[in-house]
Length: 130
Image 1: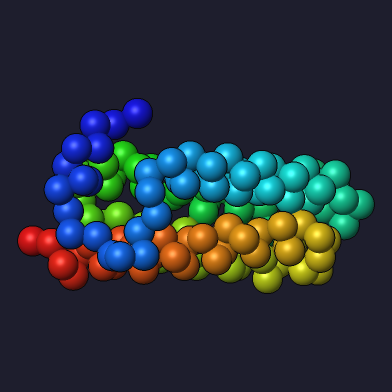
Image 2 (image 1 turned 90 degrees about the vertical axis):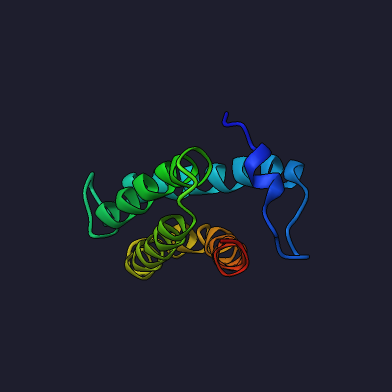
């Protein structure tokens, strides 16, 4: 998608996984998020609209722009702020989903864990690169 040669020049955490791991993890996370969304919008408690949905779509919008902000514009600090926003709105989604579908909520847990890890990786880059 973007030329990642800049990324390879950055000081990264020793916990940074190889690039191919991202290509494996993200499709799985997006699949789990999609199933969560489907289970939510088809749930009788939701009936096409319910409290978790705006939070879900807000976090998704921030998620989709993170790559552009980080890799294209190289705005490491703003990208870190976006991860915090994504995590915040995903946690709100999770909390609200518990009253609609516990399974839908649980499907977001790997995503929440990955976002936390991604936040650490992004913060490491912010703190160790000028």
